[in-house]
Image 1 (cartoon, rainbow, N blue to C red):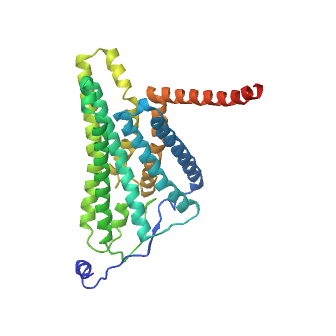
Image 2: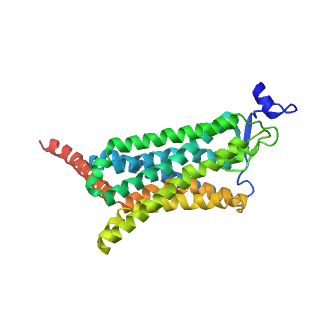
Length: 331
């Protein structure tokens, strides 16, 4: 406590508030329509990601390194939606804007961890596509189950460690002024700006976070596809190049849906109206987990075939169950 007091100054005491107030989107009219949209999006997200996870788990042909990353992406999307959406609906539907200090930090930890993992999963999938197209003969050697599991485990450790550091830096702050967070969740940037003591470490981390979590993965993905395009242009015909790129359409769609709104919002943060910024960030948080399973089911041939196969098996099992009682009765 003496260390905190010396950091705060002689005339300021260390203050840890009992609660924060989520004040984002409170000034926007006709928000009830947005709440209905959130409910619909959450239901679709839960159902879609559950279906993708179930299909990959049930079909042994999909237990490849690529679909380990897809399974983890669906898992992260499901947990991310379930972390953010119920609380978001509770805050804005029932006006429960108060959140305790500890609950806010917990909310911050899980929200940011899943946000980071979405980006890292897309990075892992881009590496998978890069090796599969550029070095197809070495794919099974370079991209093994062990490699993909190790890569995803590393990303989990890195994401949780980075977010734990952010949470730890929040705990050293004193809040002797406002406790109103101008966002739709416990946002790190909005929280540390409320502090009345030195928040420079938080500021540095808030500058590093977009670079490490968004810009570096996005640049790697962009460079990997530029390399794929240049290589195919040299060694393949137009038809072969298009055929190879068709295997990347689902991943490219996910990259565009996730990264473009996030990067635009973070780049133009100071120029965007606060309410518009909050709306953009909320849509960025809820739309990718909803659209990801839809895109993978519609644009990935392996998953489409697997879904059809599982549906046929289910129909056959139902037919067998219906026929079995009739056969026993006749006997």
